[in-house]
Image (tube, rainbow, N blue to C red):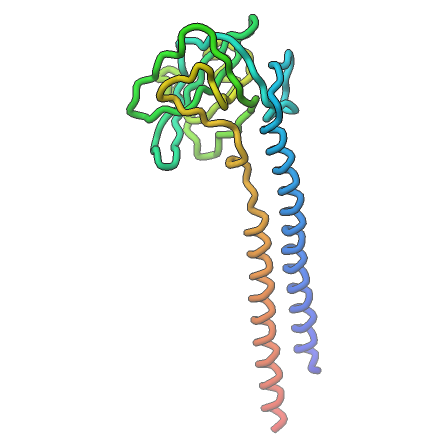
Length: 227
């Protein structure tokens, strides 16, 4: 085997091994991520408990039940919902047991006026959440115009005078006519490891084909030179 061909074979095998290794790593990450998602799903669906006195990030997705009154003011967070189009999430105050916390009441179409909350006490079942709605392309919230583009908990708590604690409603009893709860689920948690694995394995296959073609050309050229 000529020196140039040998170097090409070694280079090709090294690149192929690296790309396959990256694909295998993504398959392993996929198994890990699916386990994490299963744990989160089980936590979301667990029996609700009373609102904890103190809650941090470790309480994310915790199912809770609280009784109280919903405040009249509502912050509007612009969202889009499949088959319903543009609309708002309504974020209001829930006054419960001497505390004021944030409540994500649910979705209304963008053309609809913000409805008044139910009179009297309600029972809210939902999950605590610290959503990560903001990306580099998300505009700043227009607090004065009540047009929000992300559920920034600290900013919303400051605007409504509440604890920086958000309950995303799964059910409100009695229900609010026209307000559709958007409960916490797994939809916002990315799991792209399968696509990444397929991509790396595809690169490995392409790499192998290209290197094989180059080796064949070198071999053919060498055979022709001997004739």
